[in-house]
Length: 470
Ligand SMILES: Cc1cc2nc3c(=O)[nH]c(=O)nc-3n(C[C@H](O)[C@H](O)[C@H](O)COP(=O)(O)OP(=O)(O)OC[C@H]3O[C@@H](n4cnc5c(N)ncnc54)[C@H](O)[C@@H]3O)c2cc1C
Image 1: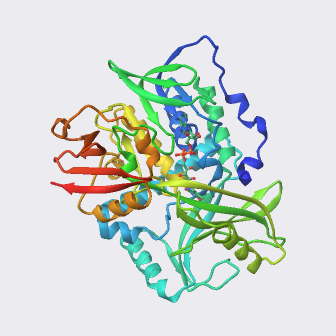
Image 2: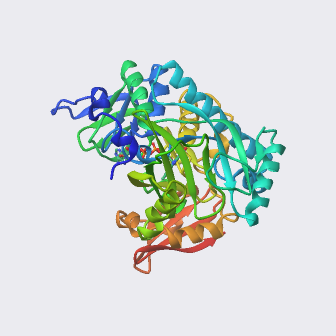
Image 3: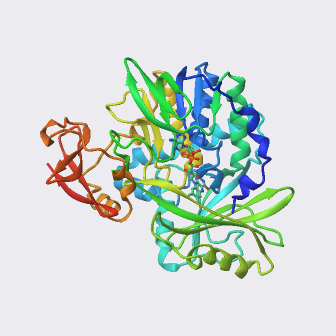
């Protein structure tokens, strides 16, 4: 079933923004070629075209109909219980910068909505992370203390609008929600107005350096550009970059119900598992309740009962007369240290950029990413860029998590695409990687800038970590 967002827009909402290419055109040129027309790619295209850059967006499918068209679309800097984790693992400065970057993003999105007069049902709402379990209450209190120590004015509350009792919640004020596809439509209008072009049904399959610029190879034509932004959600170039060793995907499910009675204010997500996420959405004057959850690692089969079933039980319990109108699921990428990857795709591909690993908080993260990359292209220092550096690798701190991720989540899809390079282990320079053959088996090797070596190996349908060597 399509998402509420896709079902509630007119088929032709985007068609007026799609460029047609002459069938005999074999190549086009521009300043920045953007691969992917989700919220991240289109936000980049929006900012860059406004600054006078000539942009071309290439989309494999339709505008906004992958992850962005299946999101919950809460616009918040409250990413679950995250700030206590950030302070403990990365220190106060990183935590504060993460918070400020995402708070700025809420403001930026509101600014775009106002400047472009986008009718996307944007509304400010408080966001709550709550618990109904006494055992998790201390985690909520720790998060409140962490935010206090960052100077952020959040509230600890024990009562919310939810139709059940909670033990406690951390409340972020003046967060927001919107209709993501109506927002994208507003971005497209501005991109086209600023002479950008968007091509759909056009799959990009490679990006290659050509002198000082790049050629992006797509199913319809090639694009020559100085800069390329990979905004494909999951980065599709495996080597270099090696994002498949640095991220996994998680699938979640959402239902939209007619509650048949009035709803609460606010957006909610619980701490701990199983996840329950709530928000309202007004569609054609009717207020619907969105309930999300049922998370599992992508590729691990889960039953209807454990996914939609759990959400439907929740709806029935508190809204007995409710009717399920929409069901949908989608997945997002999660980095090993839970911080998105934003910046240069690989040190081997200068002027090619990426934004991924938004860990189900891509409404603000995509705006943070777009601002960092636009600043990079404009030669401006972005104060948050260091935190999201896409080429960071922290082998010791995250070794366990990385091992766990590779064993559990990666699959042979990635390795199937590889051809072994005709290289020896010693030929691989620092800050680069390759697939080599060891004892007739393919092994992915990556050396970081200090010479730390990472190796992954495909085993049946899984990758297994071979070793961390120094
Ligand atoms: C269930 C769920 C709920 C969520 N709820 C929230 C929320 O409430 N708030 C929040 O902030 N975030 C939320 N997120 C996260 C958020 O939806 C995503 O992080 C965000 O939409 C990702 O946007 P994107 O532009 O990176 O990816 P996408 O929207 O997937 O866009 C990528 C585009 O690239 C195209 N593409 C891929 N490969 C190619 C290729 N080779 N050539 C050309 N085009 C290509 C795709 O077709 C696609 O259109 C949620 C995620 C999930 C899974």
